Image (tube, rainbow, N blue to C red):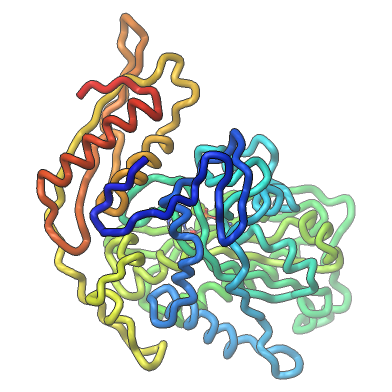
Length: 424
Ligand code: FA5
Ligand code: MG
């Protein structure tokens, strides 16, 4: 597939016929391989480690906050920080290794993830490293990194983004030392039941303290970053590796935007990582989402911009300096629809396959893709879909002509690669 993105970057031919090459290593292809050259061209960019990039700035601010607010017993920072772990992980690390994601869990779907092959993938979340870091003996750590997901396309979703993971474990003493007669309390109880509030092996008093500490830690963090005025709310949710679980949402551009997921770590995970006498919390936050709120960055694609007008706005001498981001003017969008009949049976076809194809061909010219129509013909039983593609360049006005070229290429690729029949 040829990349027609007009930003002048040509993907290196890293996706060979028999193997895929990532960060200097070669991985044999198999039936699960679905990573594209375009995605691989983002591996190793490490935006979060590029001084003065907005993702670096926000990472540094979070680090600074944790370093100064949480001091260990010997005056050392309580949380250690890790930002250099390879995004290439085993499927086990991403899902099984004590993240307890069951074999049939929907998040494993090939349609949602980038696989190098059956055993290796690009991590879909920084939680992939929780277990190994706990096993190495750490009780409190932050971990930042690039993560990869096949996902929908809009202003706040991009297939490569950055997360910061936080984990904190508590021994009996650490959790209850400030409680009067805390030595009589215990982290665990036997014969308990799992309820919406707690896991079977946890005592309710321990869980409530851990949950309180977690929410307070995160509320303090966002208050430190955004001031007290930001509207924040907690929403109950589900993750396979925490219980209870929560999401934090903040008010952004008139809407609620989810910025992080968190919860009390599943005890089974801690047990198998050698921390069976401790309880813990974990969170995973989206660095782009926070940076968008903090700097008023309207579109997630801007983080990949190499445009000086974008980058120079973040070259401040003090990471805490206020930055009033001046949006590059918005250039006009161009809209184009595409309709096709799905392949008969249509079992193998997922919407994400189409989104992926649009991204591969259209690159960052594509601002948004939405499914606008989905119908099944009453007589033939054939299914047809129509998608609307919004094209917009962040840095200049697109011409009808260049968008037509890209759109036609999408039409052709959809037929040849997804087996759909165009109604063009
Ligand atoms: C997770 O990834 C969990 N691993 C988080 C977690 C960690 C839960 C530890 C419990 C304990 P989720 O898929 O919701 O959860 O992603 C976490 C955050 O990443 C989101 O709240 C959002 O801020 C960000 N995020 C998710 N998908 C995207 C995307 N496509 N583009 C940009 N940011 C995203
Ligand atoms: Mg979520």
